[in-house]
Amino acid sequence: MKLLIVEDDPEISEMLKDFLITENFEADTAHDGAEACSMFESVSYDLVLLDLMIPKISGMEVLQRIRRKSVVPVIIISAKDSDSDKTLGLGLGADDYITKPFSVTEALARIKANLRRSNQYAAAALGRSEDNNSSIAYGELVLNPDDYTVLKNGRSVELTAKEFGILKLLLQNPKKVYTKAQIYSLIWNDAYCGDENAVNVHMSRLRTKIEDNPRTPKYIVTVWGIGYKLGEIK
Image (cartoon, rainbow, N blue to C red; front, side, top):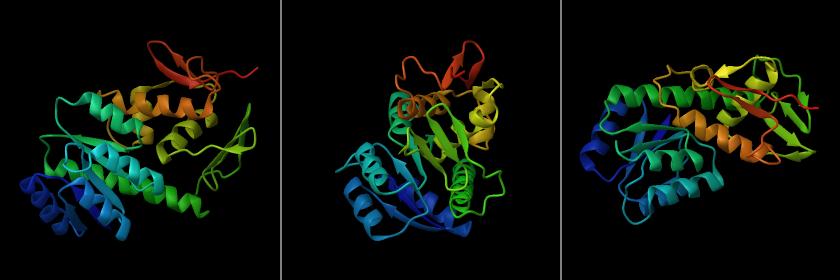
């Protein structure tokens, strides 16, 4: 597995690189946004660790450029007081975030979890998933677990792996109400630590893509004080 670390602090960058090499990863480092974009264009990476506060080209712009061409997992590295940046980053397509200061073991756990989900996604897209691969039709939506496609009124809806996972979870369990903690544990495959940002942002982004009016959703409805469930289509 080959990773790209985009971090302008040389101490953090080298610490991460050295540790990941000991864990049998390959790792390249970029110290500004321009270098990161150039390296991403020329090398195939399996995951990107991206600090938002980098010179020349901002981390947000780097993320947008990556997402125009690739669904490679991107983990944001963010400062403790930048919740708005984390939320914006997730909204632009980041998969996860790590808050500074962090331990290398925490970073490794996040990296492995995101790589595992990415590999499962790729395997399913190649028809190797062991899940039930029959398509699910609901209202104007058709979800096909076999090739990870979603259609609305016959038109393709481009979803990230987590957005697809959330929608599939609700469609396969139409009567069940899921808490944010349950959604996080099932889709992120990680212990829920009480931070609702990731679930909220991905749910909002999914609604924007599948709902006629995200402000009055019919496919994914909020059960106040509990969580989310599949809406009843009449």
